[in-house]
Length: 533
Ligand code: G4P
Image 1 (cartoon, rainbow, N blue to C red):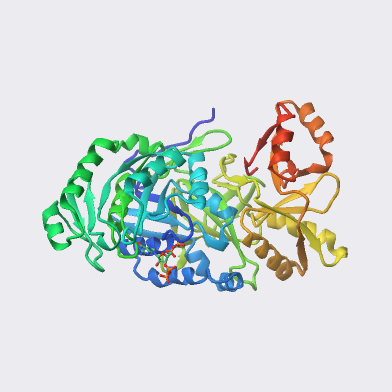
Image 2: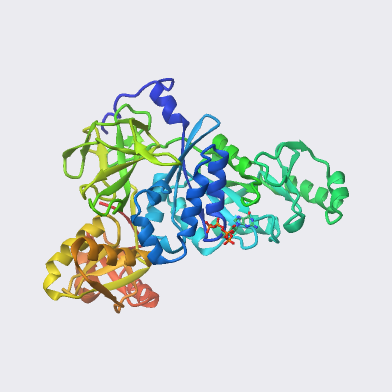
């Protein structure tokens, strides 16, 4: 095992800066209130100017063509990709996980760059499909999750039922930290389970103060509230619910649950306080040779997202890199480990809520944007010289497969190059069938196909269309025994392809064929996730 490098004592300025960082994402199903909550977190966190910009993002969900044009307006999407704000002495980096139509593999990969997540659930709907998927990605790394049950000002489901659903469908223990008093039009506020006091909803107030629990007073104000029934419910919580177990939370096995209404500003401060108090600082990261600690002196980072066309005239790309260790200084030279070549980080960009600006320095846990012209790929590692490769930037099996149809067949070579570049940037995945059939592209969100089409036209002058192939599913295949894998590939030649890394993929017309083939191929492992090489 290699030396883990020089470390600073915990009291060093570097360690103190790293320790202040809290890098997180919000996971939710569309319409649960992520945008509203993001806006409120930023407002409460003091990044006041942002409200309008988050709104701009919300408005852009209208149509896909809008998305493309807005995306090209320099700035907007980057500004909303990483939002940094200070609260209670902590530096929060909120990484955007696009939802709606712009849902893509980036959404999943962004979760590999955070240390914790806030799960927003619509109180009337409970756990929905997208939440479950995003949760599964968090679970791969046991990311600690704080839950916010939103829209309590509307008719909602029974809170016990929602907790039960979280426990059963996600296999995640829950501890209610607050408990709603009333709901819908009668939602009065929340009871703080640990402190035993209450906070009442005050219209448009940012900071509802805590006050002693007084159900009689509440019932006198609102005859729809039954003081005795509420008192019984509150005593039941203490008996029925598990106490908050910090270690279990940090291990990703238990989620503290808060109730509120993002729209009415209620519960947002509880959530911010929970993030400040419980969310973990930057974590150590596994690499090909050793685990890298965040407070190590030497800078290291990995690229988890690439955003193109920030400026259509310059074909510039911004690679989003999460700093794993040390301090990044503007102008420093870093090594791109994949190629072994040095790279000067002359204009790393740091994202403040209002704008992006050149970063003079950034610390482990932060995310910086590195402008480049296609040098950086998804999954790349940058270091100050050490030859390590960070693990855990994943590719996910596509949910949509399409065959690329080229307008001008004479441009096949150019298409091949273009697809290679697009795959390296993570726009789409490319699968090349072994039998020589035209390449197939795979995505998890259909917007990725639109982006591919527009970019191939704008940047390469290629007109393409898509055909529905005979295959619907793709899985990576592996086996301890090379011969066995080879035999499988030969026997299923016309259903096998290679991905960008040369890894073998089995494609199936449907789930039945996938299962059937799997059952008849003992020893062959079919996976729907793999690390980027
Ligand atoms: P998303 O990013 O998760 O997709 O959700 P978003 O915040 O855009 O919220 C979806 C809808 O739910 C919005 O209404 C928003 O105002 C509403 N909403 C969010 N939080 C709450 C809440 O705590 N209580 C209530 N009652 N509503 C909430 P919309 O009509 O679709 O959009 P808009 O016209 O209000 O912007």
